[in-house]
Image 1 (cartoon, rainbow, N blue to C red):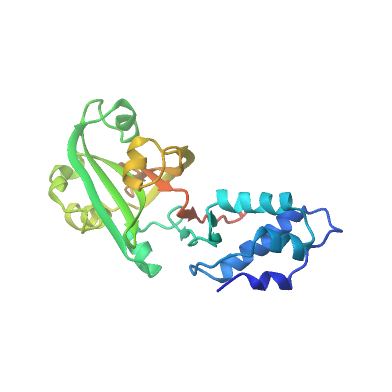
Image 2: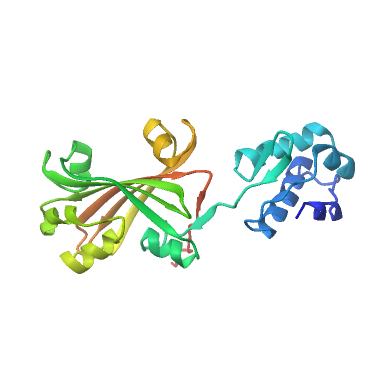
Length: 255
């Protein structure tokens, strides 16, 4: 499969939209239509000749697509499309990572890096409304799909609240944290507050997510509460920027 369908397109040089952006839109449409099937794009020379544009224009387009994780330029082979990022509903649907990935037809996996009793830092104690140095359960998990690591999650739970101390004995590589909390401890999470930032990978994230240091991460903090507004979970998730993108549904406020 190749990108020859591009040669049915033409650029409009009479509108104010830059030529490199028009070409980028054509390429993104082509990549989207082919899904996860990798294929070679036409060469820079072919694109220049067909669209009658400069090599610098083509290179600007290719540079942006490369930085966005859509293509890879490989020496001796050419420009190859990469698998599309996974659309995630994490920001507006309250469900487990495993449930969401299975719903998309993917095979999720979880590796527990550690699960231990720790003293709450001042920041964690504040978020969970705990006395400083109170005990928390700290659960560190590496999660992914189809054997590819996607997200590194550090979760903190108040150890003494609802008798959660013994949750440390659960095998969270196989079971859902939220499901265990609801079924065994009668703690139902009904709302979350999430904060999103862009960060870069340090040594820890680089090692476990299998990405270079300073790679872009989508960093999300979550505070989860019961129906009484009691905070029972604080998590910090670092998602690989090259694999994930998040959907947000916004509704107009009715007056």
